[in-house]
Image (tube, rainbow, N blue to C red; front, side):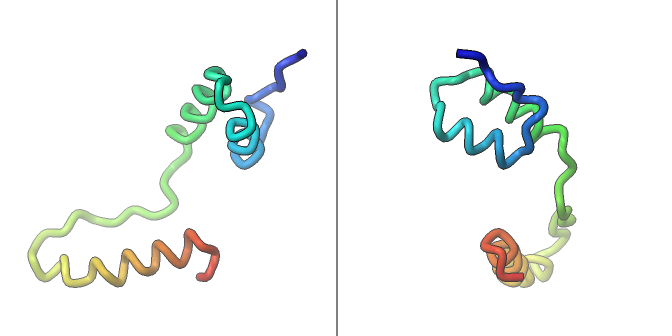
Length: 71
């Protein structure tokens, strides 16, 4: 059986392959390399004060909606 070309796969294709072939360490390592090379989609500045933390619930809810595709 030939192994697929992991570097030619999209992130979603590689993730699907990994979920079906959990014992394939090479696929896992290629996926982790891909994850670490992609820039973050949104960067939040570190809170500078207690008042900054008041906005955390709104940021968390926004993140959850985006992850669920509801934004």
